[in-house]
Picture 1: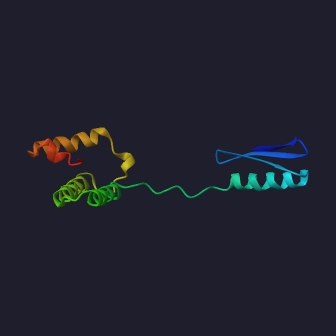
Picture 2: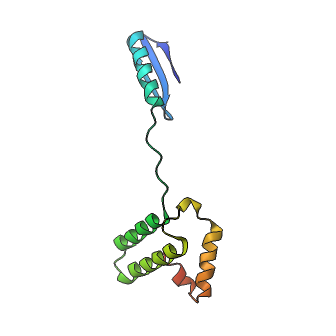
Length: 126
């Protein structure tokens, strides 16, 4: 986890805490041991709970909000909302984004083409 070594007139404490290397020179061995205990305890404490899975609905809402913020054209925002609705209905807004696959996206594109949509209408990301 870490260590203490003699360094000039003091003692150097060297520890890795969550991938970050911490190194400090202190005057006494007792101070070095206290610092080593403190940093070692900090290294054992979990940073935070794992984030919940991001859903397709969250991504689509963020995308539409971004389009609305950067576009001055109302039709661009309308097109983004329409695409978000189609994607949400097709895949389900609760779908975890991590579970999306290229095959799933290809099936969506093929279904849109079968309904007569033009490629520009399917991909409204520009």
